[in-house]
Image 1 (cartoon, rainbow, N blue to C red):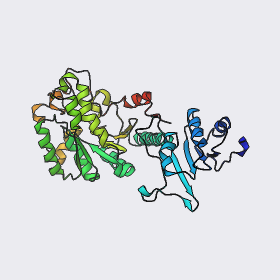
Image 2 (cartoon, rainbow, N blue to C red):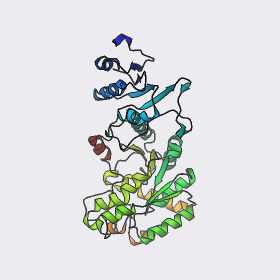
Image 3 (cartoon, rainbow, N blue to C red):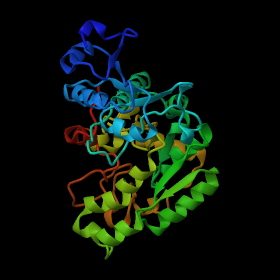
Image 4 (cartoon, helix red, strand yellow):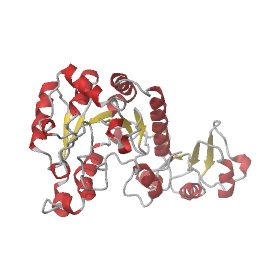
Length: 366
């Protein structure tokens, strides 16, 4: 097929026949955002090969398969690099009976042979990143109320709050209860919390009228296999956090694009310069209290008449699992966490997660 026969159907879209010469197709798609490969019949497999060759040559835009294809071919088409499949019939486009009449569209396949992210996924991550950066500029130095109100406007039902129900948790929970009361509250019940934390959680839920609490627990089979004696924290603290925090949270985050946190700059370490909104390579973190001081927090607790964590009076400034938490002399400090270990975070707020993911090929932003 000659290059001049490749029909352009809109400025950023190129349509190719399935039998297009690969070298000519590669030139034709330069600068295109979308490439449509048209199949003359479901028996013609040349479009499969063309898609794979375009992906190998570096094309990262959207690939769409169009033609009298079969529903049974959809999974294989997606694995070959297509992002979407339009199945044509004489009486019009076919509809996916399993999605209430919606056309066949791309869905991730974790069992695919290749782990290459699709162009649609890459563009979604890039858009999420750009929005977070714009919000960070807009909300630099803003009040917690302004940050949360704006986040609710942008992310709506795709936003949840992560709370440890620790020493400073009541303030964030009170703010969410006032501004976005239907926001899901995610609590990681690691099985290693102080009894005081669990009782404090129940007290705050009742005191603030929280109605959308989600209690996340580690997988019981994984715990039996990896921590049969309950002493993994002594052998490998990072592995214990991964088992009891990182993985359970990861399994719960699929419905959400953004996560509200209680992190503050005065916590120091890797939190020393956090913005109001940030992108971690996967999701957006909303940090309404990033710019407050310890005195600001104390004043707000007093003004709102919020109950203190029972362990606060015993000198616990930051409260997590009992094996990795100790009292601290400095209010607002996280020095009492993981004492004697060279770490500052449990892993759910890992600042190098995105870099590791990119190196592993799991996430590539465009």
